[in-house]
Image (cartoon, rainbow, N blue to C red; front, side):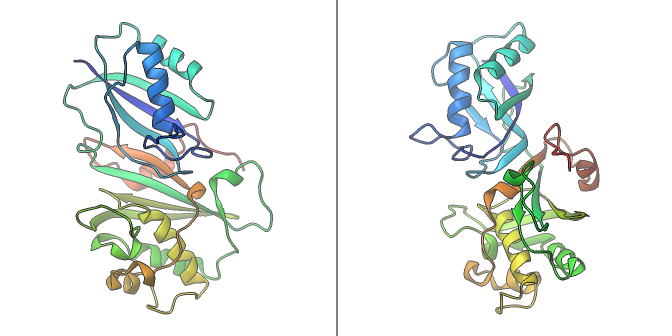
Amino acid sequence: MPRLCFEIAYNGFGFSGWQSQPDGTAIQDHFRKVLEIALRIKDPWLVAASRTDAGVHAEMQVVAVDISEPIPDLLKLQRSLNALLPSSIGIRSIVVTAPDFHPVYQAVAKVYRYRLWTGSWDNPFFAQYVWRIRKPRDTSALLRNLRGVCGTHDFSSFCAADSSAKTRVRTILDVQMVVSDDLIDIWIQGSGFLKQMIRNIAGTLVDLDLERLTAAPDMVGILSLRDRTMAGRTAPAQGLSLVHIDFAQVTPLKEVALQADRGFKVAL
């Protein structure tokens, strides 16, 4: 059975995340529906590299789909599917892949970006893509705390309480913070992530700057406690975007950041 690899992008606002929901409000539900119409197959097998939460965006989500027979014109299929999908979901490319390709098990690294807006006003052109906070007192301390999560650790302090993960040990390969006037981009590259892990890291960074946390003086200390109640709040979903996924080898984070947004960039 042929297997296709789709690269898609979406604005997560108004959707209940990637994973299919009983009420049909997930991105997967919309994607599956148009596949059924265009390919004339019922309930096709499909799996995505990441189960993004409700409200989280994706500039590069990778989805594998099994089809019943070869498609002679993939560009025509791409156009047909994009015409059927909501405007907030777009298929960037479709390629034929190996029959055993699996976007979850074969991913070697993922890059997420969390955006903070520190301006005194809400920029209407990208309010849906940032978390508005007050200007940090010390961005250098923010960066030091961010770097504290690098390496292999038990990330229980930053894992959602209802996570079903068998282990909470994960590896963060690299981090980066880019400040552009009132916009702060927090980049995190890892081999895998726990439920709400990045949003909890972002919320903790902000709460540390606000001196709201007393259990530990910095991110390293909070990480060592392995207790979600000792870390900061869960940052809003709209500030988070899945930006890049590697399957063969890990792309350096600086390179990903330089080439980022993949058509998803909002001009300042």
